[in-house]
Length: 454
Image (cartoon, rainbow, N blue to C red; front, side):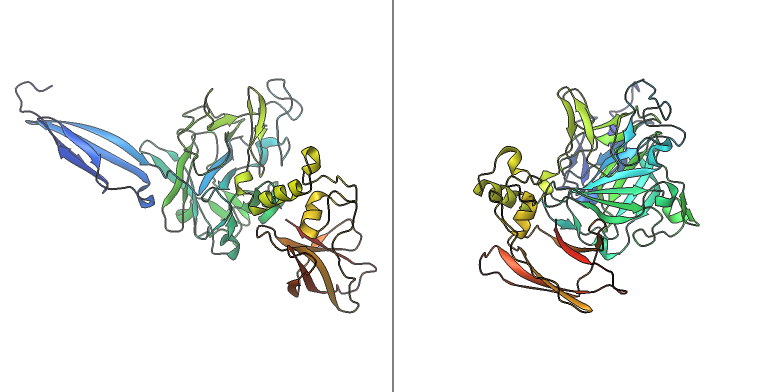
């Protein structure tokens, strides 16, 4: 109050280009959009409104955060367990609450629950496809009073593996390699793209092939002698922000301090308790009626779909929207062969011929009749091995690879010298594939080849 002063006028500083402050009746003003927002507008804006009457002024500051309503990558989970704690506390042999031993699906029950790691999901447009992640950035930081502040920046390199990353990819980033108790980098470590929709890729934060590291001053963490240090992932308000190659904010800030506001302990993980999609919002937390972000003591699923508990039991994230054409075609195929219930599962063998439904779908055969796969040839002798076989060609989501073995127990990927596809006259849904391989040197007593469909 300023008795005797003139009616206040309201002014602003720090307004972004998409906002306009319009004077109204005496002592009022209206703040409104002047154009449609774009992805480039996402971010934090510190607005200052000043009411001036006579010689007195009152200043009010606001932090405006603009979020992308349709993110192509989201945060899925991060580890807040400290180095000297177990998941859900306690010891190696007992949880702090006396319940079943909490353990991560990949790491098991270990101190620190695998170290400093975070997990993301590539949602793209919510459907099957690929996205180019070259030059993207993951910022790790905290809200230090004026909005998100980046403390670490992980920069995706220009490696060609980043160029076509499938929708539905679970992407883990970890500060330890395998020798240090974490996991080395690997693309498509698990590939369920054609069936369940998810693909798992892991990146060690010290990998120079997949992350561009400049210096501590630029990236905010140290990489010395193959050891990464200074990653700010913990239970003290950790947040993340994802930027695309153009520097636009795709998702975030997200994490503790956004939703939920507080509550992550150093014995817990932070996770999305919902199915991953472009509709996920970083400001929605889990409540009795809403599924969103939450802390979760007993469930830690590095590299796997998240799990959470509801009144009706345990729920697992679904990646089916990213499964692609194969899911639809396979369902049509099982229906055409009158398969129902468990007999229609990918892994079922209803005709008991030693080949499951997935093999018969990919390489030919009738799942209701005990029969053989579509024809394949013997290997040619000599240094150059030529092998012909029949495989499905009318499902663009299907991918094939080749593996070799000397004992039929341990299989390793093998690269073809050439692959030629021709029409398979008996069935237009399939092609005859002729592949050439180098025979191993020195020659093994026995050597086997197989094709794998994904």
